[in-house]
Structures are given as structure tokens and as C-alpha cells.
Length: 297
Image (cartoon, rainbow, N blue to C red; front, side, top):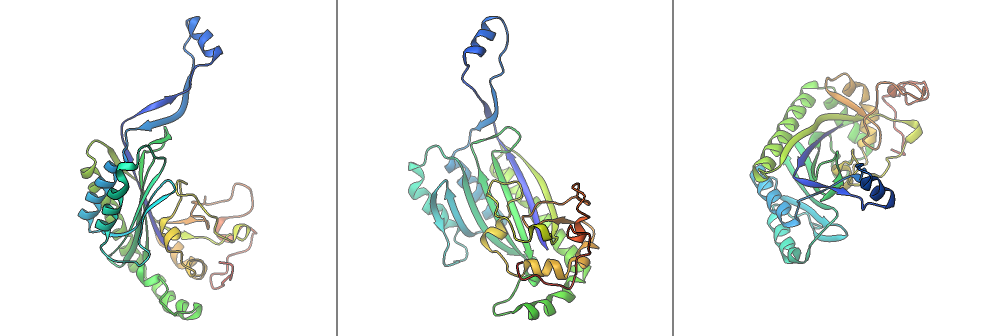
């Protein structure tokens, strides 16, 4: 099971217009109004302002364990040694090069945080140029219940024996959901205080369980800007996630507020419009074996 949330941060911007061509100029000369829209916006977002605001918000949350800062193809900071409480080091690394960074396409700042029995990975993404229906800044929060994470040296059978009883305890999952929702809300509020000129909203905050799909057994790679990009999968992929999903699918799906997703973290409908069967039967009409384990997962 995974806990997944997104926060949108919308700032002022201007629509990007096409240069008028011959037809557009003729139409305007005849009194018409040519459509020069591109469907894209350019926001007033500077790298330094984003990093400063995010640092302020994350410090307020106590989420100061930095993972990385990447601006386009430039890796500004990466915590290869997993040092704790190094958000200040990330900030210093950025300001060593910040004056040389002008326009940019995509800024990604990631931290990890542990609280209330959850291991959380938070990634802030900023795109000055973006689709008009998308935010200039997005915060993606992904969490895992620490008790469900594999331990060092733990094999598949030992993992299953330890975790299976925990998955049958609805109180553990419900408490994790409430704790996660609280963290996402507090993150929204901290970002809003650090960026008062922006409109900050929680777009999603929910529990998800990966449903085995025999037609797409392997997890598809997603780009950071994809709608269902999961930073926890990107930075700390778990070899046991698929096994846990298959072995404990029935327990999780009986719990309220748990949403099914496929291997690439894309929400699944209750039934497959292609006629391939309901999501709980793996798409081939046969029930998922809740006790089975596919090594490809």
C-alpha cells in the first residue's frame, strides 16, 4: 500500500501566444479576432524564489532531510551518503550556482521525512512554462507505512510472515491515512505561508493499493511531470511492494478510502471499459490469487 498526495501552487502568469501568420493578419485586417492561443502559460517563477520559499516551508514542517535538487539537467545537490538534516547544505549548494541560473524548464527539489510511523518522500516541482490547466508549482507527497517496509536482510518469506498480520489490522491503516492527510494539509498550509501570493490547494490525498495486472506486469517508468509520478518509487523503490500488494490485496480492498492503481500508479476504474474484466480479476476473468507471488513483480 502507498499513501499519495499532490498539492497545486498556482501563481500569476501570462498566456503564451503564437506569432500571427498571414491568415491571422488578413483576418485581423478584415476586423476579425484570430485565435493566437497556444494553451500554455508562462508564470513569474524564479528558481531562487522557489528554493527560498520551499526551504522556509520545509523547515517549518521539520522535513529537513534533503535528497536532491535538480534543475533541468544540472544536479545541484544529491545526498549520496544519506546524511540527516542537510536541507541547509542543499540551500548552500544552490546559492553557489544560483546566480548563473536564469530561465529554466523544470526544477525538482526532493526531501524525505519520517513521522507518525510513516516514511515520506516529498518532491517540489516548478515549471515556469506549463499547460494552462496545470500549476506552475506542484508538490508530490508519497508515503509508506514503515512497518510494511522490508528490513535489511529480510527475504520474501520472512517479510510476508511479518507483514501479513499487520495488513489485517484496519486500525494501523486508518491511523496511517489520518496521519498522512494531516501531513499533506500542513504542507499545503506551510507552502501557502511561504508563498502568500500564490493559490495553494490539495489536489489529492489518499491511500492506494497496486492491483496486479497480468497485461502490464512490470511497472512502467513515469516522467517526473506525469500526473501519477511517485517520488517514493523513484528514489526508494521497494522490491516487496508488488508482493505485498498481491498477498494482502483482499485485506486492503475491504478498507474504506483505499483506491486501486496499476503498476505505474495510475488509478484504475472499477471496471475495465475494454471488456477485459474487472480490475480485481487481473483482466483475464480469473480472480487474483491473494496468496500468490509473481517474481516479475
